[in-house]
Image 1 (tube, one colour):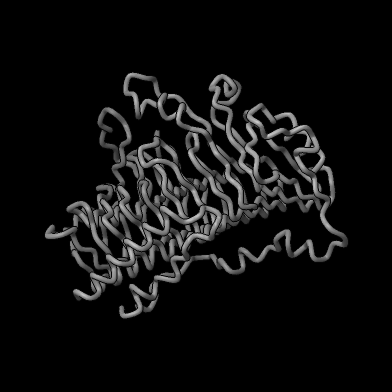
Image 2 (cartoon, rainbow, N blue to C red):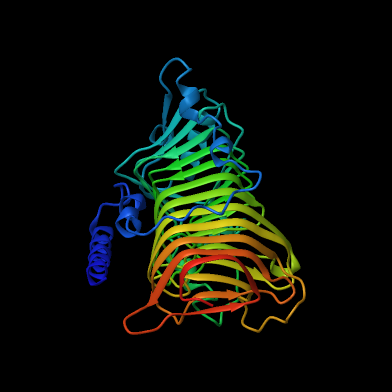
Length: 444
């Protein structure tokens, strides 16, 4: 046991060192490489969990642009933003990007290039489709948001928005910088005397089909970094998303009203959820995720202001959570309706995580207390499998479920979470109906 503890400490120290001093454009450490180190000696559990009416393999078999590109003759047309007047010297390059996008969108088999070695400043822009597929946006330099808050008067919720663009790849080894410090300073969560107002999401993909976002760095978003909204068949691969741990509402990757999504091999450390999945989303896989700092990986929040929410078929597989304020979380407001069902969290290492496993059906993110209500978003068929590590809070496992709609069919399989140092980890389980429990510590 002492040898295993020493091995765990050594790995965490090595990982943090590599994360701090590694180059951002290198592929993040695949969680799958160290999964066997921690779980190789641990008995595997026969899965009691199946996704109902879902087959991820078949649902993601839609051909990507690369598949179709092989059948097209000739090389892609390279469209360089510099050829349309972009300078990358600190002045506003928005007009040049709009002109270059128009040319690329109307071209067959085009690559829109943002060259390396320069920083291009942009005001809020919507890049609209449909375009003549296939289309690639290759970002090798840095795209940086305008720091003038007045530039967002027409739309305070978006900076870069891609709308209705299908069969689209966004890739490169560049950086998308939301330049968000001024927005954080003017947030009501930082300055309690200020009114609460919306801030821009750095990059939004809206109503896109067959989309790949790969090998980029997103940093210092004004609010959320990367949002997929009303999209179908998306992949987010090999991304690095970073912001200070005290930056407000800076979720890493946000999934809303989106179906058939894969998030893989991403390093995310921000001031809010590393990954958040909200209403209207189904068939979402997140695997090989490194998370911290931040608020963990969250389903929700769901059901705010008595709304209906539907989330189903979510799988988080192989993740390292380090120093986060939550681990894997489901959060719903009282008064909501609908469901969050068919959810699996498996093969996860927790390191000094507050609330490593939590379901909160009494979520309340308000200054004043939330009144008790009878209705709730129903939570059912949730599996926690092969999860271990250390908790920074007393409650390593916390199920705070609704009196009216208790959590149903919750399984804990091979869960072992201990306290930090000499602290004793506990479990708190209110209004939860366990389906299966095998080798669990701490127990309810």
